[in-house]
Picture 1 (tube, rainbow, N blue to C red):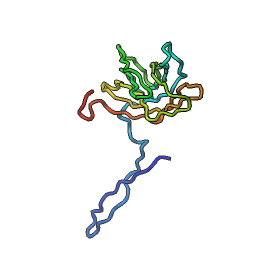
Picture 2 (picture 1 turned 120 degrees about the vertical axis):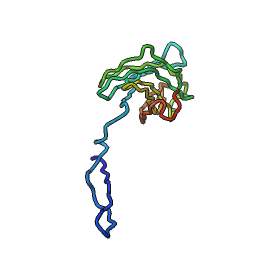
Picture 3 (picture 1 turned 120 degrees about the horizontal axis):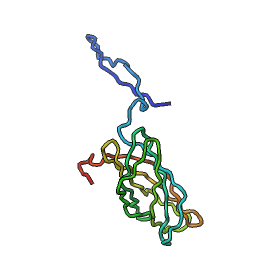
Length: 166
């Protein structure tokens, strides 16, 4: 069930300062999205040829009806880190389709460790604008020392919204 909000108006009747009711019920489902929507899930990681790196693959799904382009990806956490990878040319992700992003990530945490607040940061172009997609990850290192990621949240910000372009 969606949340409902009410809009109140002042009554214009003489001598009354009443809050009159509602013209229309409104829900979050009525609002059209004005930013890209992406879903991210991990595909099984594997050890890379370099013993300190893990090869991670994430399925990045364009959940909109409009194609988007993936420009770069980075993983900037101290305990779960990868260099920025820029795609040239950009990777096209059709509407309602996905792309597998692979990234060599350094993670040398001991078994049974949890790393909080790691991020997979995607730079995408959608409808002619660049957007940063912040995928907050929880990293759990299993008993065999294999890191696994869980997507905890995804937030999106238009590049330059704060006055800083890069």
